[in-house]
Image 1 (cartoon, one colour):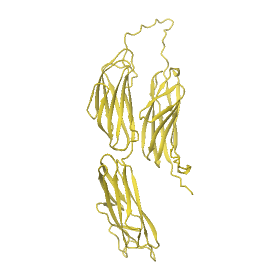
Image 2 (spheres, rainbow, N blue to C red; image 1 turned 30 degrees about the vertical axis):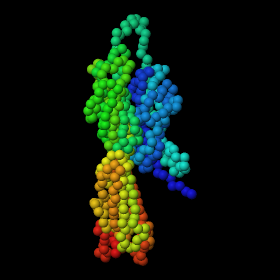
Image 3 (tube, rainbow, N blue to C red; image 1 turned 90 degrees about the horizontal axis):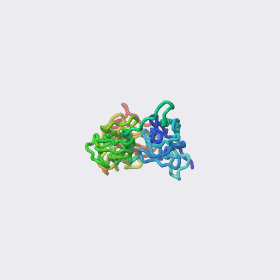
Image 4 (cartoon, one colour; image 1 turned 45 degrees about the vertical axis):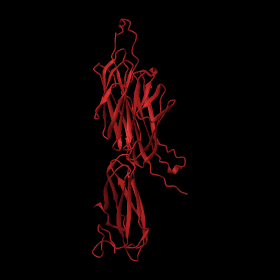
Length: 415
């Protein structure tokens, strides 16, 4: 038995370090930007990152990562050709790294989990990248020999930190994505008054509702949540529920503000990104007959079925007949550039059947002709389906369109 290798998927990974510098003891965020440049879809995509000593895993923006000691594994699921996304991984910096620059590399690869796959069937795709994390030196706590010790301040400044993550990684169009926003006041002694979080959903997200841990939220684009006062060391959370309305990368940003002046170095904005796959629509194609002679008509049935949770619009089902078959009729379709195309709108769970009639041309020899149709759209995963018919050959060369041959309605010779 022989196996045909699947074409490789070109996985690309870019790792971006936290903004310089990170304070000793604080949390810094690495940003992983990943993409599949094709030509194949990549199954079971995984990012692996072994953290250097002194860095410890805290969490990630997608809920996709786990840690075993210093080894961090982020399971992204399948990544279609042309898809891209972004993932944030938070690490805590041990004070022992003060004043140092830490270099850290990560890798991305397709790691199919199907034990039945043989090596020739595994998509060979991988990439790696590294980033630096700069740790600020520890502050000087003792005065110089000719400098009196400063008096401890009576108070301090609030230092707001915004963190954002998303649940629902790998969702399809129509699925729900839940975004979590956490605001922390890491300043000393001073509360932050009148804290407000403004969340701006990106293109491709429809807001379903927002739930704050304190206060109230209003609006949809953007969502504005008044959280009240935030004591030193306290946190407040907002959970934002959205529905994905388009495929590809969707971004959600949140900002925090307070009338109380915030200390320099505060992180007042955070973003999270999710990769949304196209809604699940299926296409099936069948032929009314398995064999045909020159001049016979063959009817193909194309069945488009939506398995999405929402109505999907702007669907196009296109069929380009191969040599040996000529169009006769395709009710409801528009014919352009050698193919017939239908534009569809499918409700959740709806099925549409389309018919196409072709005529078999004269062929010099018997040939099995495969005919492929494609379903695509801005909100669905591209699907294809094909059916075959065997056309019996005749003596002599096949006829061609011209003065001596009759032609089908949209071209292609037949008797």
